Length: 601
Image (cartoon, rainbow, N blue to C red; front, top):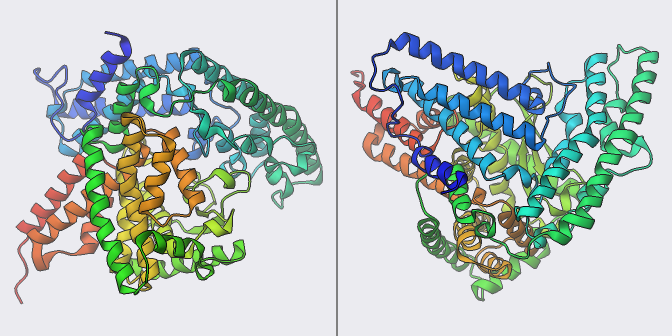
């Protein structure tokens, strides 16, 4: 049995959090105080190691000691990091989990899950595919100017140092991708069409035309003229000597080697150790112990249920035609579309602002951080998803950003916009992620982590919560909500279809196009996203189903003592957790509310 399969079986045994995890020292007597101290020390040391190994991560969480550096992503460095993570796991196993209080046991389990997944990711060589259909290391790096502080001369010098290092950083990524090509750990050819545009846009002749020039276009007021001139000159050289060659080398590699050498097959099952790899991605993204076949059937059932609700809306608006004809009507009628990017952004901002006013009735605890509405950057937009939330670096003066894709306006209908806005902004990702970062008492590795089933499940639940907040009064917007829910149900079917059942791209496109009112451009970009990112699309619907199940349980058991604001606190104020831990949290919330004696009148 090879090393990857051994590790995978270990991950299968322990990734599903919530049950009792035996440790090496469980049979020995231990002082609980000492064990808690050892655990916290391990958390702290591993977090410091993680930040030193990942300077970009360090910047994003407000640690600026390494702002002049980029990660070492060479194969040798990544193996050293993986070995260090294995060593941390050995230390963790020596701590007696059974002596810990529940809050520390949850931290222990989530920490162990993170470390095990990182080791498994390395063993499967995920680092050899550092991009997907709509983004990657190269497009993420293009936001460097938004993700660093620019208050002092040293801040600018750190930024310039990183610009100069990019060519070497890109070279390491290219070497890893070349190794992936040789062993078949490579993206499918079909999802790479048009990716060149996200690279070539950074190959410019004048530094002032680069997205990396933005910090030099506006200096802090107190900088002297000499400082501005020196930094601008140095920044221009760094862009032309570091950024441009790095992107040029990456473009050459992609067009001459990677894309021609990429695979014709689609599914993760076709990768090295593919079946095990896909099961690992299922566990990573869902936190549940489910097989691809089980998830596929859950998706089929949800598609059938939601289809009935969609048919009811069509009947209510007295549309004279079939389901397919109604979808064509939605995709083509001008009333559902705007003519300018500004008009789409204004619509999104109005929806988000209206929801801001509803939040106090639904939540006891709200984040302090504000957010804004912006278009998806031009260099990303053509192959990018319809919208996304981008959280700011910790401790920065930046807001959260709700990105709306204004590219190809005939593919950006208004009937989906309420659901999109509630998912990406409030009460969805901005609210949940910002609250998570503001929680006190969580270890840093939890404050700055994102568990997809929890976060994306919350986002989809937030779309549904709009009904309670008075949205979707227009039947076409309600159909848009249902089409977004149907979209996430279809993901359970098509993701497992692609990666475990041999579905073709055309089958996926047909399934999405015939069951949702998504514009056909979006159907294609989403299909390529699922092909290139195995398992991630499963997290939305499975997470939402769990949150709604737990809410029904709380409502049934508490009756008139159920308070939706308290329920939302119970969901959110323990941070991002695996779904089995969330279930434990809500059961404890219900039990605590049940024991509380109501005051006498």
